[in-house]
Length: 338
Image (cartoon, rainbow, N blue to C red; front, side, top):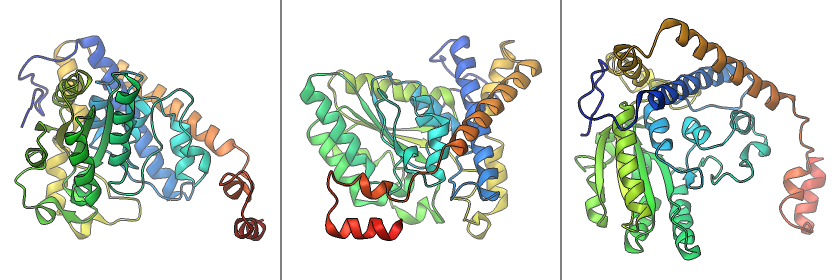
């Protein structure tokens, strides 16, 4: 398993980026965590319909996003808010989607990103199709798709991996192995020694990295993206990480995982190891940390205010968006909704 930055913040190899860029990525991880904790609180207050926390997985998401060009594609899941935000999706749209508002599923103009996928595994096929389409158009754009370990047990994973390998599409498969498919442990859902091993069957490169190591994820993703961009086809990256919170705000993880396990993973906090590394290079201090926390909190609060301040959509809106002219049954349903 590739590791470049250990939990104590010790650099074990060459850093893929300089200190200025490391500070920028650390700031992004801090903001992502502020967003995650804010949304958890909002759901408990009844202001979000549901929420899937990602605390503990910030390095996997921020590190992967940092390896992409702005015109590359991102196809992600309901737990990938940090990845999506890094690639251009706005916090307010992500919040809006969690309220059930359809406008939250509308990507910003000019941003190559799909709305967060709720259906487990199905979005990987979309990423392969996008990469294939870009090749038909003659571009060198890459499509990165992110998913959890549970999604690798879906048939869509097989279809996406097989098609990508056979047609050599510029697709990067990023599995954030957080050890649980809701409550099902990884060891229970597959007999493969690692998820990265699954790449062998499809004839593509695969690598397992420390998913809580920003530098390891960034390095592996940069390599995979460069390979895909140069026409060498897809890669599977397994980022071994851990979700410190529940599967969703309706889940009780205490029913299926021991508290000691959670505490062991807290000691591998992806933010803390970057902070320690920056501190060892005299590029972190408490005043800067307070400023990061303050500005991140202000931006998230502003995004929430924007999302909650929009006028509600009329009840007829989802029906009116289906067809240019509503079918008789759809018109009947629309009238009932009104």
